[in-house]
Image 1 (cartoon, rainbow, N blue to C red):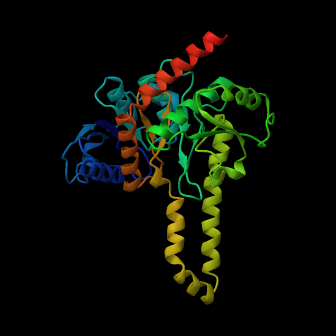
Image 2: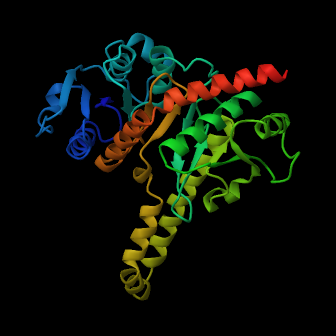
Image 3: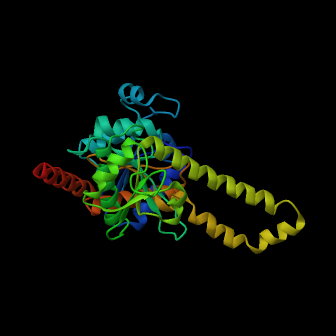
Length: 335
């Protein structure tokens, strides 16, 4: 397996990227990693270059760059060169913790879409109370969507969840303002009707308040609503931990209590840790493209690499393509 990584993307680049890459090649068989970035900054951290090579560039797309313009103008940026490695078949998958918009642009314009997929979807795995987690898509690749786009999201999400997350016959829910049939706006009503006939285990509408309870293994929505849901979940988690910390530090009595439950709180924090789930897959592209969290540490990078390896091993891209083609063929036959 050949994976290429934007070594300069993210808040902790290149250190945590390089450390995560070394962890991955040490633990995953038949893995070769290419790091793209400033060799002068990478080499001092790369203490073991077994199965790791470096492609040098000192051009970087920053978080302040306008995504489409940056991808078109910064031809030698680490993120753009990464996508080219995949396009030219020098790598099977790519990972970046950098500018999300630029990664989506590079994915579309350089890597390209799967035939039959109208729009890709950005798809993180989020935690649930039982520790199982659920896939939410789209969370911002496309703020507008049509009903048949949500059907494609559902198919891609179900295939990924079954192949990579090893959940058999995963349930698929449609994010809505109520669980009853017929709820929602024109988009969700049309999507609900189409999803009932789609090749997925559709369980109907789900509400945002039930997401972390594990209402479905895959939850589909448009990128606008999905991004709001994602940011709300992230913000709520951060706020709750901040409030807990303030409470436990408010007096000597609560400080003693904090010491007694420290390990339990650490376990709860681990359940909500994004690094345990890898990155957000940009589904619908011609090869696996993973968006790692901007603040990824070495563990998050390692898990993103493992995630990409699973997508390669289980032929997720090819399975999505064949399932979409089959669904479109069957739709045409019934019309």
